[in-house]
Image (cartoon, rainbow, N blue to C red):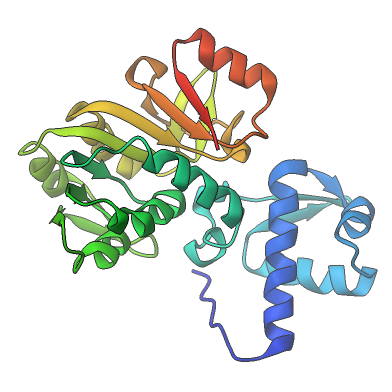
Length: 264
């Protein structure tokens, strides 16, 4: 597991920022040649080699015959990295999805970096019941007046700080929510909503089955991706909130499936 210690060191922070920039570029342009990556990132060959060497050691990228690609999906990246990938876009999506939540509602709020951005905005709502399996969400909302917070128990997935499994699903069975708000890592017109962490899928499905409406939050980089485990077919999805860089053909395909798409 990669541990990121945010030192008070400008050289260290510049290196972290460069790696985040490289990961963001690879999300949208993989695979890419080392020469093209150096040109786009505006890095010297020696600096690029140094940062790529560290990313390879952290098992985040693979370099093969001059080509660079991510070794894992964006969801599998260490949480500390994902929180600073596409942050501005995630915040726009969170603000747009806030308009979908009405005072007095009960919502399931799943884990993820985009749903966490939404949780930061919820104190502006006057009355809500929030049910979550994410410790980071719970820590944000635990002392907020006007929010009745329910934290689902279960096996904690380290790093992500989310609960899943049999105990979590027993808890879900005791509730019914107006909405599930779920951050997806992979959305494909052919395969629906998928997830790389197979152990979490049954919990995610339980949350969806106990909600009247399912709302997916996902930036444009999540579309056209397929992870190993099916979470939900599109028949279970009501609304997708994304950004304006979603491919036009994907937008048309979602609308053809009678899914409401909100562009942040």
